[in-house]
Image (tube, rainbow, N blue to C red; front, side, top):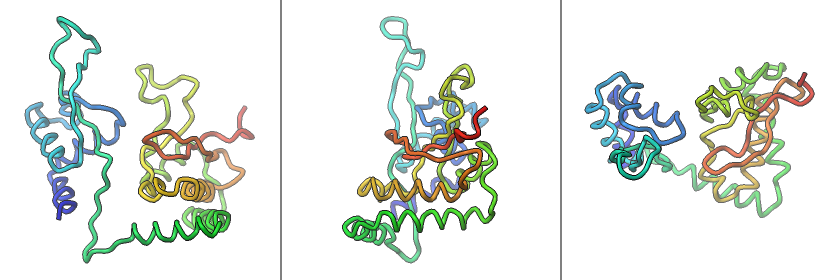
Amino acid sequence: MKDIDAIAALQDPVRRRLYEYVAAQGREVGRNEAAEAAGVARTLAAHHLDRLTEAGLLESGSRRLTGRSGPGAGRPAKVYTRARAERSVSLPARDYRTAAELLAEAAEQAGLDAGLCAAARRRGEALRGSSAPCGGLEEAMEMLAARGYEPFLQGDESAEGGTGAAAGVVRMRNCPFHAVAERFPPLVCGMNLALLEGLLGGDGPVRARMDARPGECCVVVEASKNNDD
């Protein structure tokens, strides 16, 4: 019932807008910023943000948003980030995670990595549904967003608009296979890479490669080297 209650908390449209905004930032968000993004008063935003925290969908803390310390720096402000815990509802109850973990354990023990990657690549090609590879990073981000990866262009979050050397690399805040990947990282991350290789297509303008970072998907997408000017 706890997961149902948490998901039900998003039924309110203002609460949902606030949650989606905080989740999309990938960093701590203050009440003023969240209120402005959702188009509501700060007091209303604070109420809903705290309700989302109570529901376990957000985590809260406090820090000085001015970046200063000492006298005159101001009081710490309350900030929010998306909670790392997963929420899912199945009626009647189903336990696909246990099945996935058992299959992953068996595949790892039997050394079936290559077979799993081949199957994942075929599935990616089937999901693409076209013989043409992905046309570019913008199209890749749309495809990844549709699969729940929450892609973002690295560098977009900087104050200067993301024109640094890292711009042009698409990272993903969410791994759809996170729970199983935590227990079987080489197996599941390899499967994930093969799936995205099939989804994006080979020998096209973009490519997927491994570049694991804490709190993000283990795969990144970038322009193919053979397509660089």
